[in-house]
Amino acid sequence: MGNRLWTALLVLGIGASMSAQGQTGATVVGSAPGVAGVGQTVKVTAKITAIDHAKREFTVKGPQGREVVLYAGPEVKNFAQMKVGDEITAEYVEALTLELKKGGGKTVGMTSQEGAKGAKAGERPAGAAGRQVTVIADVIGVDPATQTVTLRGPRRTVDLKVRDPAQFKLVAKGDQVEATYTEALAVSVQPTKAPAQK
Image 1 (cartoon, rainbow, N blue to C red):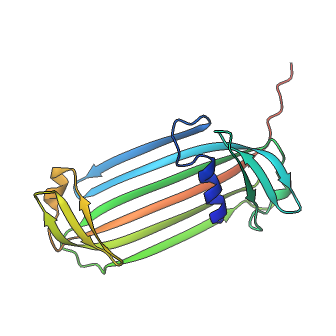
Image 2 (cartoon, helix red, strand yellow; image 1 turned 60 degrees about the horizontal axis):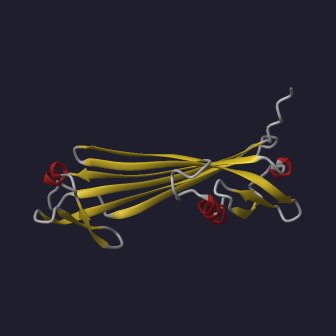
């Protein structure tokens, strides 16, 4: 799944108002001593309204009535099985965790992992893609007056406001913070449901 698919799904409503019709979501916030995290899940369903087999393009209509044309690249092995009226379900998950590393010792830097998987031949079209980025940053300053921690990472220096006084008390100059950002998208196509017989 390329950037075009991610962008199109955003246009359809992922990341928009959580109360949108046909879209569900949840946000989770948690913390423990030296650890804080937030995560969000959004699920949106769209209906296929047109298919151009020659161009490998299909049009979907999202929960807010927006239509977007998507391209099914060669990684979509079962494109021929898609039909007008089928539903596409997309579930997007993102999470950020921050973990205090007392005393430091790790190398400041950034690592990234990505992966993708498609449906097997003969199955309904489906796919999943994910990415995880981990950054190690040094704590180079702590300001009790503003409850701000200054972090120097591999690319820049940032000031981070720590709103929880108990968490702030744990941080000292010379410590490190490990930040991990994870995002994943899973897409599946379901056939049109036959009308119930009377």
